[in-house]
Image (cartoon, rainbow, N blue to C red):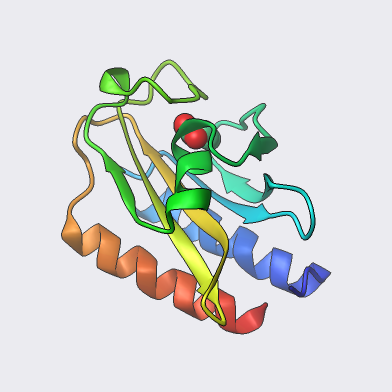
Length: 137
Ligand code: SME
């Protein structure tokens, strides 16, 4: 996939816009799959910066989505066993995979400080964003 500077700038703008305009979207980031290693890499983020720049496939909510190819809506992060905490304030999370030519190439990850913040409208909206971003990659 194309990882040129302009695409990353666009992805950063999307993170900034979502995080600053939607009250319940407290942290927004794009994790993208490495070309050869089974790891996700943080390309852009908005909100309190996370230390988790690289996440192995299978680990945490993000790593699980890298292998399941399915949306993961977490109503309450504290009820999850396989979860990587980025901030003590986070209460719910949604991770939506991004596909190009049928391949799971990464994901958008949103954290909320509100419990059960994400519904099906959020899923449809974030799926749409991922489709737009995938066309740039
Ligand atoms: N909570 C995620 C890790 C990424 S942070 O939310 C930014 C997970 O469990 O995979």
